[in-house]
Image 1 (cartoon, rainbow over the protein chains, first blue to last red):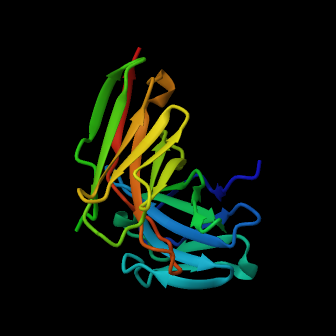
Image 2 (cartoon, each protein chain N blue to C red; image 1 turned 30 degrees about the horizontal axis):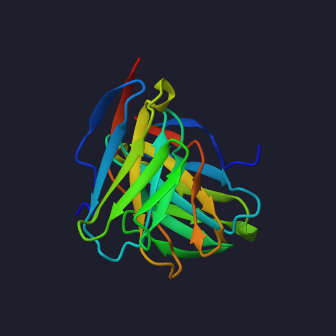
Length: 115
Length: 114
């Protein structure tokens, strides 16, 4: 299967703990995006990588959030000192531009519940 | 501010009939639009897209229409099938100047009635 994969699929943690999620994009895709989706809303952009460079971060991404993409392959999203408001589905998408257009392909997401 | 709006949270359609899902946007800079389908506990799956230079794009049972002057697009599914029951998200993107982050609507839950 060459789709986007995310691990873990589910994470339950206590408030104040740190959590880390992993995303493995489609292998030839050089762009990687993180989104967050809360109940009743559409996905909201968090951050974007082109290869290993993190090129943009949303203001939704507080200083407790950090993302990396070493070597331009997989990416990790870490949340430090989790808060109940961090409970959401965290989605990763990857893409590559072809013929002037780009389609983002999403992974299954990691559902985070902060107690 | 919600730049992409899906004003119908839910829609029920009889199997075999046409499903029409609507989406409005406010940012005139958007020039590429996509529809995604999402099942529970899964990530969004890409369905169909349209560039702002077109007014229609068709792929099998799915057709997307774009009315730039009205800042409105719609997704038509015909004939509707039970497997089409899902949440549908409209998404929009500004011109290709680097970060092509998507702005999503809040989704419409489509239920196909057998």
